[in-house]
Amino acid sequence: MTTDMIDGVCVTTKANVYFDGKCISHAITLADGSRKSVGVVLPAQLTFGTNAAEVMECVGGSCEYRLADGQQWIRCGTGERFHVGANARFDLRVSEPFHYICHYG
Image (cartoon, rainbow, N blue to C red; front, side, top):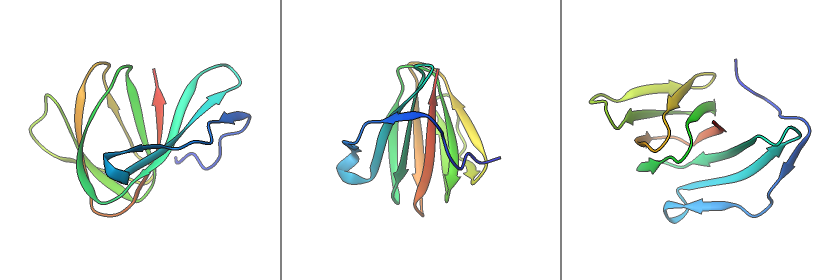
């Protein structure tokens, strides 16, 4: 199931721009204080690092990801998600715009 809308949020209007514009996101805070980000990654191969554990939910397009302890690339398409541990690194390979929600914690 893909999240189509998130009700009752506060949106940080200034975008977070990473990797020379290949990844752009906006932070959101829910009424209960939990945080998420919503964004898009443009075609590229990028390496991300986490502070907290993350769940990456694909809401449009697709990507391939490789966790730091993994050897193979795994495809993630619309309606799918993958988990990344806290203080970890992961690679993301994108050949079409990848729209996502990052759920923290």
